[in-house]
Length: 273
Image: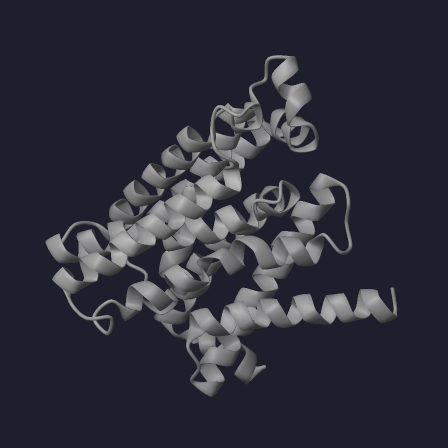
């Protein structure tokens, strides 16, 4: 039992575990809708568009969390405005709106780094540092997780219906475009939480991989969410163990473990399922 308990005898490991589990819960629950609604590209885009806000916050000594959140909210609103009416030829397709906004915001972040320092100075933003989560960032993760869970509970029927048939949702007055914006805002909260854990580059994996794994074994929404959380938390715990004993980067190790669980699940379903 000694080696099992050894990592958690250290305060920074316990703090990292709690931060990871909270973020993993947010991303796993919301990731089900990201996968279900085929918004994986949106999840990837939102994780990268935190860069301008992070760089500006780093340059001027502002809160990194608030900088990332402001950048992501601007992205969510921009995508929603550009794609409004796209199905009726009064806007652009959502994937095109995401692509334009994603690349433009990320390019802006890269440009800003030329004023704010080298990539080495910003490496902790790109790859995260789960073992050095500040108290303010930790409480933001808790609040974001609470907001995401409450929103998913209160808007459960609306999200589910608009995911199945957005045209019917519009017909009965639910408003699929408003719900799409709501999901993009929730993705913003989840992504900002994940940046501290696994960084800008890998955050989308926390949203997509556990939910994609769960989708191989469950079809109903609630079991799918529960299984997604199990996969996410398993990846976080195992990734932290591996990073501790083998001196590996924690964020990348967590994502790699999640990917291996996905690959193993796919192989099992392919040949034994």
